[in-house]
Structure formats: structure tokens, C-alpha cells
Image (cartoon, rainbow, N blue to C red; front, top):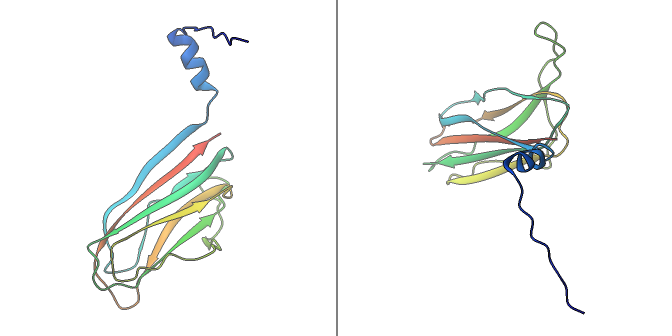
Length: 139
């Protein structure tokens, strides 16, 4: 038995229709060159009802003496005037710097609707900088 294949060509409109059915990736840099010498809070990221597979990629650079910890916080937002207090998300671990350059991936599958932010706390100061990228998929 000989298999036969039929080649088809698609127009630009057909390609766009196929792409419109696919989930959209969301990628945003929320901190750049942020000093790790003291505590900080990242830019807030809104999370709608159709955002899934959320991740924060934290790249720590130029570190020689720092034991700071990264956490993720969430708040529920009804509108511009009504929202909950920030609450720390319970992760399987909180990424901790070990006095060296590192990259952490904080993955949140099916995060709650509202707003997210990354929080860094450092006991007694430290050195280094970090970049934080947010990514998700709009389904």
C-alpha cells in the first residue's frame, strides 16, 4: 500500500484564522536592573479569567553576598476602588538567593483572578541586581 499526501496552500487569511484560534502568549518584563540591596515590590500584573500557565522568570546577577527571598502575592480586585489586601501565595518553596548568580522560574498553573506581584525581602542588605519577566497564556 502506498501512502499519498496532498499538499495544500493556505492564504494569509486562512493562516490568520488558524492563529486566531490558538492561545495568545503574554510576555512582559516587570523589573529591569532592580537592586537587591533592599526590599522591593515588582510592578503589578493583572490576571484575568482567561490567563493560564503563569510564570515569573527571575534572573539574579552580580551577587556575591545576598540571601534574600522572593515571594509572590495576590489580591482580588473588584474595581479601582474595591480590592482585597495582598496575600502571600503558598508556593512549594520560596526562591532564596544563595550568594551567587541564579535564575528562578516561579510557575503558577491556574492562578486566581486578580493581581499578582513579586516581593523581595533581604535580611540585613546584600548586593546584586535582578530582572523579572512575566509570561502567561491567554486562552
